[in-house]
Length: 164
Image (cartoon, rainbow, N blue to C red; front, top):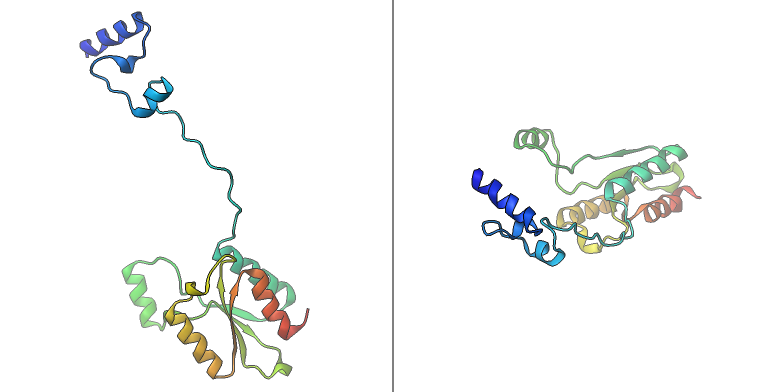
């Protein structure tokens, strides 16, 4: 401790940064900026914010509620413990079930509208094989399905049945 104090006093007396004493090695940034600490990293400019899938789905559900359209969500995703996952699997939770089931208008002749929601900047490759299998099944039993990329896409799909 005394040796460190002596080095500190010597560094101050010689008017040089403390990290330039023999036992203390500066970081590369400290050498570059001439400071005994790393200079803060510069942040890049703000990226254009793309809503998450959760935000898109919450906005879509708000839209459905405002229009009075009956619907329900299947909460299949999310991180769970192994025990919670086993319980849900025993209760019938299946991988790939689409996000939202929307009641179709009676006059449409369609059983239901099934929506798998993805982010606005999503790609068709974001749809898993299990999701494709469920969407094909729902198509085969008379439902109309849609992989919607963002709120606007999902809204347009529903409005094509309910009108604007």
